[in-house]
Image 1 (cartoon, rainbow, N blue to C red):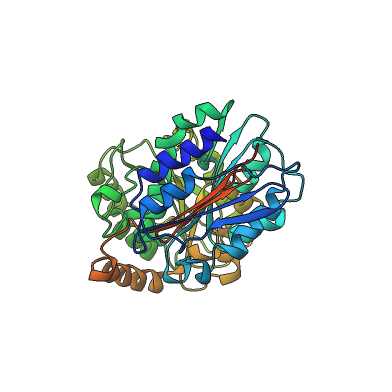
Image 2 (spheres, helix red, strand yellow):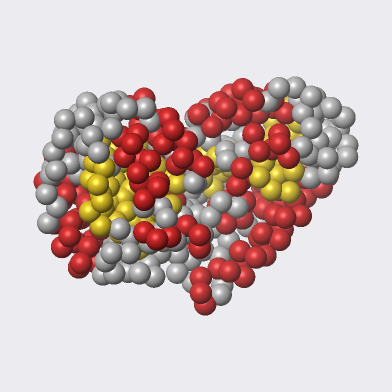
Length: 398
């Protein structure tokens, strides 16, 4: 318990805690969850640290992580408890566990997804990696440690991850291009593959749309890497993530690119092709290094083949898929393909979104991106940390 408590203290000491920046809450759970303090209980870092340092292990026999996660969703991620989710503050959960849950986690895991709550997991000793994979939002949000004394070594890794997540709003411009985000808050490295409908009706407009996004990216082998695939009845690689080293090279290729033409769309086959041929190290992907993997689909029609299996494979591999529709795109289809429904856009709305977010980010009320709702939840020690806009929760078990 002392190692986890020290981990939380050191973690919180690196955060800008305050009612208008990062809010912290703490709870414990074993067979039953219980609140220590909520997101709006304390307003200063000193108060929060004193409360965390004074935590006592509650004990218990069983570990019901599913019930604990649901308790967190129902009792901490609410306005009355101090959550600012309604103001667009990102929500996140931080789970630390050392054993397998004795109850079902699937319902709570679904509630986290439906609430757009990002889940981070640290597994210690007898924790089940498969269970953590089910709970965590992305595979890069999971770390394993053989002993509690070693989790201190994970602090910087998770501080970086939480910072990236807390500062990224899920729109093609703000997440992909970091439009308007102060440089010190930018998640500068990401791998982005564009998959666009190259049929006769929309191919040129999709190409031009991608070019506008490219103009805003910091393309470099050590920053943003870009790949491009166009498709109609079949997919065709234009270039992969390691083909070009500079923005100028990518722009030149796009300006000279001719849409492949065609009438039918086999979107399922195209998604599967990208998954198998572009998100791997041989194509330049840095997935194994923990770099965010992003797929941007632009389509103007309905697929004639089944796309569900390919879309599921992308989600299971933690590839964040944006689905941008134009012309005759099918809304229900885009909802199923996107990593989550909030990542579905149409071309017109994306442009409006870009403008609105640019204005928001440059207004006096939105100049700081270091605000978070942090909740710490304990199983014998569990914690939740909400970063301004995001809620981060720690669940600990022994």
